[in-house]
Length: 104
Figure 1 (cartoon, rainbow, N blue to C red):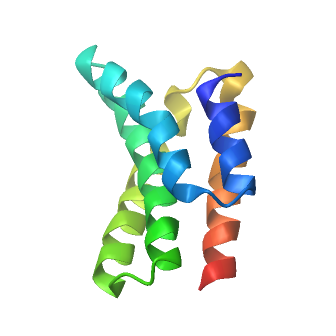
Figure 2 (cartoon, helix red, strand yellow; figure 1 turned 60 degrees about the vertical axis):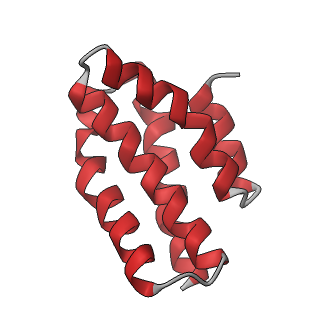
Figure 3 (cartoon, rainbow, N blue to C red; figure 1 turned 135 degrees about the vertical axis):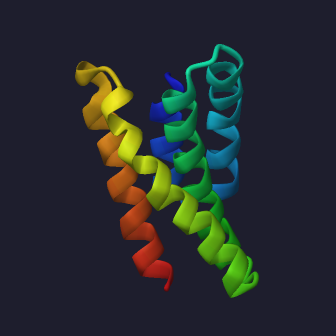
């Protein structure tokens, strides 16, 4: 199972903390390789999951907004994802937005 498929499964299970962890290694690898836009996109997904985890934990509004705004800022880099895989990443974005709305 790919990391994005596992990420999506964890979002459905509402295990946002673990979803964050699943993409961490990929994000670090893209960053190490100098793939800035791809790393940025992954950082956005990670921050989206983190924001919802913070909502679950009833953390400060500021923390929740900082992480969500990072998600919004970085999701624009979806264009860097290969076209044949893009639908899975768009699914992850849609799930994050939907789940956040459920929790607010």
